[in-house]
Length: 264
Image 1 (spheres, one colour):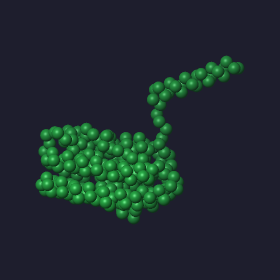
Image 2 (spheres, rainbow, N blue to C red):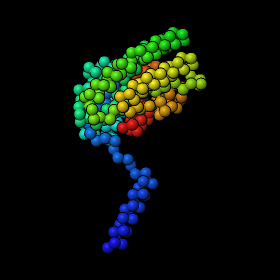
Image 3 (tube, one colour):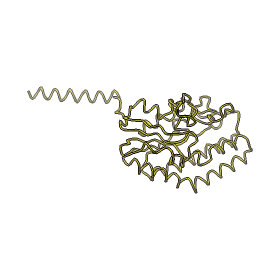
Image 4 (tube, rainbow, N blue to C red):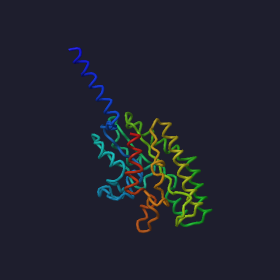
């Protein structure tokens, strides 16, 4: 009997080790309710396959929150992210699904507050000096005003969903530098990339102060920026201007989803 029990123990141990060496699939990140908040980078603008009921919010079935929910089957999934959202819009329109049972929250927010659209419009249509000036104005906003607005959103999330694991996703760099690329000058491209880093640094700091997990997409999108030859971001599209400089479906599944998987 003792040998039989010992043999069974050894067999179980060997099976466990073998499974680990073979790379057994990880447990699902969360099975409780999941709520996806934020702006167009979370709603999936640029990815296509928009949910008709989402209207101008343009929530996509190819956005990273929708893909994560499809793969992990949370007990419920509330997708309130919306194109064009600023911090105030999140507070006013997106937090209703949050409660003490919420297990996971993801959010990208802050780019519209900092004037993302106006920065890109200025840099596309005006001179290098005008582009740099507009970026400096955005940086000043990120320094002086954005932290408090992010604090308001993050505090509201914590209050409404005190037991949730919160993942704050950032923004990618837009351009691969040092390449021959039609369109914006190298000066503008570098300044826009630096501005993305500046914004991400500010958001990461506020997220850390609230005990939230930071999801940095810059590493996963590296090699797939505009001018890379394999871009996961839309370039300027005059026919569908709203999708310009947003992730494609591949950018959502290859750039954002792996970061959410890891952070969640």
